[in-house]
Image (cartoon, rainbow, N blue to C red; front, top):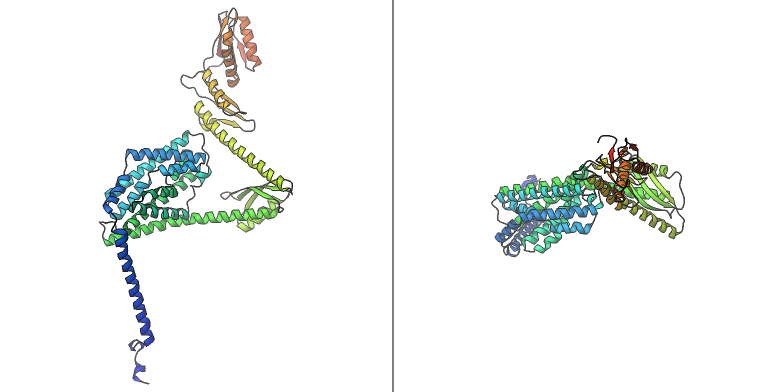
Length: 522
């Protein structure tokens, strides 16, 4: 064995091929470092050097603090947003997005965090906190007074944030911070629409007013996602553009780690939410396919609703079909339980139609109109309930709604300076707003009008008071006592009894009027 062969492997000279590989690695590393250095120099010369950092900071600082103008615009934006959500009007909601000044303190807090100006950061945080609370309370107040308190599509769309909402906020914040740094404030309009800061706060106010914790929590999560992502992204952009900072390199590294941790902390629950949405979407697709396969080819599904929170899962659908299937519910439930892996209950309403395509389309049109009319009726009923509760001085739950007979009943509480005639006027006013409905307001047992006599008979001008007596007796179901001359009392008693009002005639006491009172104490 030669001496070279006896040497350890580590002590042997590298081969020519290994030397070439090592030189290539060194050249690649040098080229990469040189490229990064050139990019860094180019970035400083082209992107950073022409930025007036002091002017940019002062411009952002001036728009991010708590002022009377800021609070006024918060209230106006919140009011428009909550009305647009209640009306399910995207155009109105977009108008609220454009007015909202919430973007300013959020971006300001990001820049303050980046440069280490913690006094400015606290002031931005105060403006953001006060503005958010004012917006939520103002929206809750509007919803509390509104007759519309149902969860619309616009409201529901802001109750289930997911990872895509985080990405929207991220890209929008990048564009917004760039626009502010480069002096292109016009871009902020698009950013305001994309991030939609005010509508989630309005939905939080809606959830508070209606005591809906699901809506409240989901909308608050969406708002916090937008808030944190925008602030942290603004901080990253400020550092990327070299805004001067009082932080040391170690503090800057800790700052970057904190920002990264915040993004990860947000991404986890939002990712879980997205996974749930994807799962439910896939389940809806499976349900639609299973129902379609159960019926003939010409059958159509016109409505499909799945309640994933119920146990078992409840699937409701409406199908226009030329052929009625007796065992459809059982067959579909069995198939869905197997495919979804959980117990499923199915309720399918089958509407048998002709195989003629025109007949199917006509049936769909009729059903769509019926659904639209039903939805409109529900909105009217909600408005009616709220209005009756307000004018009667009671809670909404104290209003009785009989949908089958289209009647609404409520017992009013005594209101200052409002007599029986006032209650009757209010009832008539509400009834005129909802044709086809019978509105009955039971007034409190207030003093009844006396009926004046003229020449031994009821005076001609007393017809309105007589009608009021009849109305009060019908609504309360309480007997009315009459006292006065025999003949006019008998006439009045006959009118009341004919209208279904109980009457008690008191001992006669001839007078120039008929005294009336309730037979029971108020």
